[in-house]
Length: 597
Image (cartoon, rainbow, N blue to C red; front, side, top):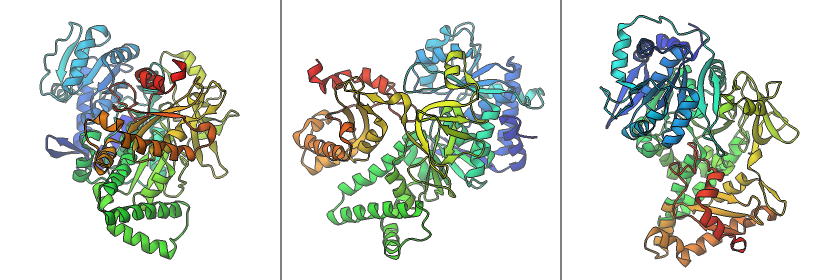
């Protein structure tokens, strides 16, 4: 059975690997295995169960569930039948879910979790195309008060129905469209990106060609499967390589899951790595004087070793090698142990990764390979690899992908990974895809002579002050996020007379500093204390001194409440939605421009 579709690719591996483990998943407090053979049999049974419900090629099946084996099971059962699945974000409010389900014309919705069921109950009457609800985490369908046009059953019942059936005997060959992924985006209403089996198969094929994945690898999946990066990188690519995927409790239980699963591979976003690093900084500030000095020294040794190794130098200078051996025994082994102790490498995507941070992890024995992509490109465009790694870049284009830089600096992409277009959006499709098949990404970047791609900013994210200054916000925000006091930053200044910045404090670190300086009280009062304000003012001025004059914000505001997905201020990969923040944090922003009141 060839890889003509995603379902046939996975079923081929199920035959090849048989009794080997494909999934490790957490049920309550214990972890359970699923074999390749079991998974393959379940895909066929679920597909036949869907067919028995009348699901046909081209029909839409939406999935609203956390990361769990049932997610890829329903995904691949849908694709087996030539259906089109529509992944949904758990953080989406009910009105957004209704919009997406109606726009896609979904007839079946697979759901897990009481919170998500409550959302479905709220909107079910507003989605007339929905005919069937499948509960992924219940032995029988719970009564949630559905309208008459919608019936429900459990996954257990669906599988039982499919086990009695015999058709279809094989996946639909070369079925075309596979999924419509609605981009969360940082601006505007979500658009449905149409990706084919060919798009995602090409991406998985390229990823396994350039990254040293193998059958012994175990990947802990904690980014949402509804996002293209985790779907293609953390699911299809890992399965194509024959590895095992573990599903725990997501980011909320990541520390415990790492210790329990001991993965060899992780797909992550820079914010996760920044939090690990900031935890080390917090540990340093809370430690006795001698340990503080050891940690500060080890952090610098790690960065130095990482810079040497990622520059391609054959061997470390002897004095640095000795320092690294000592730092490894004192600090780095414990860090690797906190990540499970078996990590071979991390793949970082979804947002720019700070180069110094990447060097530190590399020096600590945890290589981080930064990549770049977007949903519209399947999603991966380029990636650093063990053979070709340049910190500060997003690597070289994947084997089947072509990249060129337009005259205005925009990154353009062409290849079998590029989407067919936006669903029901012909004008948006024409704006993104030119007549030669080049996808205009909206990102600004550069290609060097060795083919390494660097992304500098979003084309539409440039801030233009009322003085006419063009400012790229991401490098500035990234510089502020390097400071241990700061968890997140959002630069403000478009059509304003000068730049300002919203700062989200790293609460754990600030509380350590507050305790050190004898400051106590409720969190807002701590942030407003003169001593703490002085620490942030010093940090603000230090960062500003490192920036060009035109890029220096004049004022800052500290946010007691961090940005969140619940308030729609963050995307699922934890990028700040600037347009939303301009509305949700209007009072704090206006306070930095008193002359405009």
